[in-house]
Image 1 (cartoon, rainbow, N blue to C red):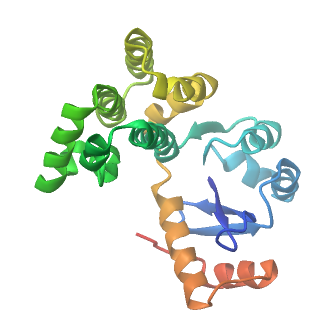
Image 2: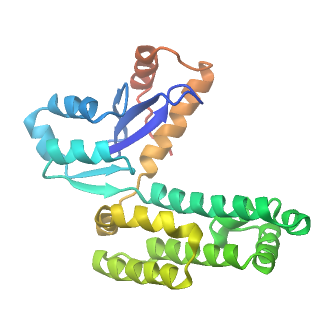
Image 3: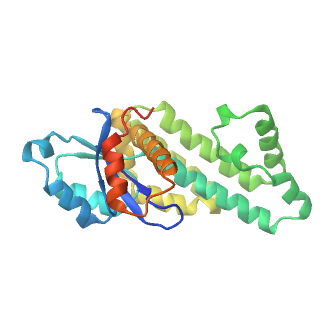
Length: 249
């Protein structure tokens, strides 16, 4: 089962919770908020045999989800979605770039202009123009160079290792590199990594991802655009469940 959130109205912060089953290929339900008690109430409504059949729950870094699943589905393995982990790391990189640009000379600011995607996009997927921009960033900012190289090393762990214990060793070594280089911009990510370490490692057991849930979210966004938004939750939920957002990919 996938647990993910999406804003009912963009910019208003009113998140709803989307529950989906990737193997079956459809949305299970949409809940009005992302509170622990709301999720627990929904899980309580499942038949006992359905509860027992849920073996893996994929979610992002929101503690109420974890607490609800541990309380109501003790047999399920909780997996922290890799997409959200990388998103968090890229956010740290973006914040570092913005701070460096803010305090840089006019010349350096100009050279760093337009470098966002060169830094956060997977290096192997960069266009020639983006590769050239990345080389410029490396030349003018040693800190961003270090951040980017560490980001790519972290991504490589996710993409190449398929064993949980090997991943543990690789991630611990990566943490030591960040600490040795004293990369200030990544310190907050180290805290996040430490707090969610075991659940991140679970993603290496079955190579589980939240790609299906992200695909569902993209289709829900299309539903919202077609309807010019939804101010009423019941209408929003009904529209999603009617369509069931099948086969989003």
